[in-house]
Length: 63
Image (cartoon, rainbow, N blue to C red; front, top):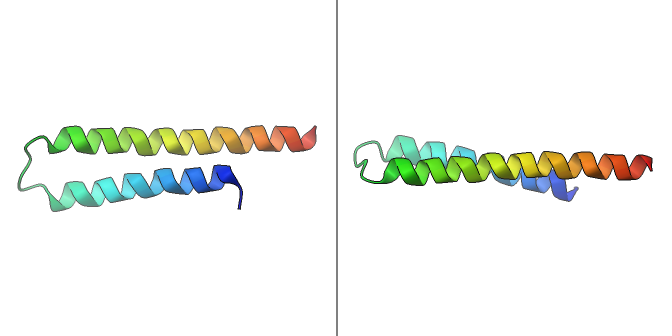
């Protein structure tokens, strides 16, 4: 498994975990939107980073 794939899956996992966290903590919403927003940003940026590193790897392999 390539590093890019691992990073992509990590990002998707963070997004899913934060969505589950959001659904579970709808009752006490103090400061939770900020945490949820930060985790979504982290997950999305990790997914993008993984995609970019996969593209770079493919370009290097073609040489």
